[in-house]
Length: 181
Figure 1 (tube, one colour):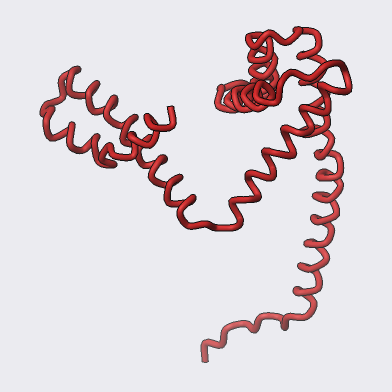
Figure 2: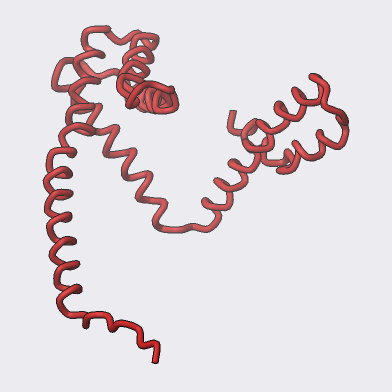
């Protein structure tokens, strides 16, 4: 799979424009081919961007890896809290499969990640009850719990910004009326 995705980088980024030149006219076949050509072109651009990011050796990219690592560690800890954790490779795979649930067009995105993870764990042979309770506990810790201090911080920040605006309004001189003489 890694070789396949690296090979996608060789697809021209303007493949949709090349196909548009080959398929002239506004008939169904031409429109369909142009739309289909946009997918590999977009994937190729994404793969090339990812390769460029890795080559840049930007230390900030370690933050993403750290985020995933600690997020997966919370999921692993939840499995241990409620029973026996599946192998680490299964936890990592199901985590990323579940995160694909963010792409589902669900109202508020509620349930996509949870359902994706639970389904993936079930496919990998994890007890359904254990998967449900562990994934829901993980989501409570990793997603919902931080929203409480985040909401408090947001409200405090609004007050601070309001104070800043009042202070700036007091310190700036009143605008003069234009003189037309």
